[in-house]
Length: 321
Ligand code: XMP
Image (cartoon, rainbow, N blue to C red; front, top):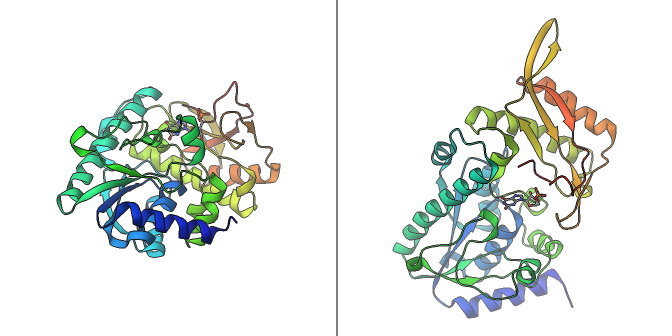
């Protein structure tokens, strides 16, 4: 019968049989899939696993710390952190086109990850790469097992020929809700287990306009308020995703105290969905929206207007870019 403990035991056994005494690497993104996959592998082969976290500087408030501190404390994995924010920001400098942003982020990600993987591989006999592929991903891609290719998450092609690893995919038979159940049973941080889907290119595609540190800080502050209020209202699991989008090139006039302001709008984009293919805007209670709006305009100086996206998908996408 399906219990989290059965699945964990079966996977641990299968991973041990496959990996033997070889070394394994795993890229952590901050998301639940890679976190659970790595935790399973760590349970199976301990320090034969090295996790790599490429911090591209485009995550939301607290998410990098969650990986570096809470996740490591919960699992004991050996973690190599690469702080690559400067590099990503330099590469993104002045770029406004959404697909261009994705290409640049994907390219930089694979370069940084490749470098880190080489460093890990230099110190051991690394034969395997862990990926958090879920059952729906397997079905979608035709069911084949691959060799290393850091697929969907960062929209990148793959590692170079001389750095090909065999894949370990302990979540291949599981659905998302099962992965969360297992993550919970493994004692992973709750915020990670229940994290909403978040795009690989991160906040870069939630800043409409060019990406820079100041804009990221503004968006992070607004996004954190929205997340805090959603959680406080007990609505996290009622919403599929809740992008907060900064219209960085738009300004509108406002008034605060006896002063005129000329600030940026942020868009709230809470959606309900089953699989992200279609979505509807979430009918969040007006008092929750009001609290988010009041707090953002009070606490984030650069933002003087909060708007709600009431478009379904289609025709709108979930993200604005
Ligand atoms: P859209 O905006 O197309 O998004 O309705 C559908 C789902 O995909 C996520 N998304 C991405 N995920 N890299 C990712 O890893 C991307 O470039 C990307 N773009 C969109 C989005 O958050 C939603 O869950």
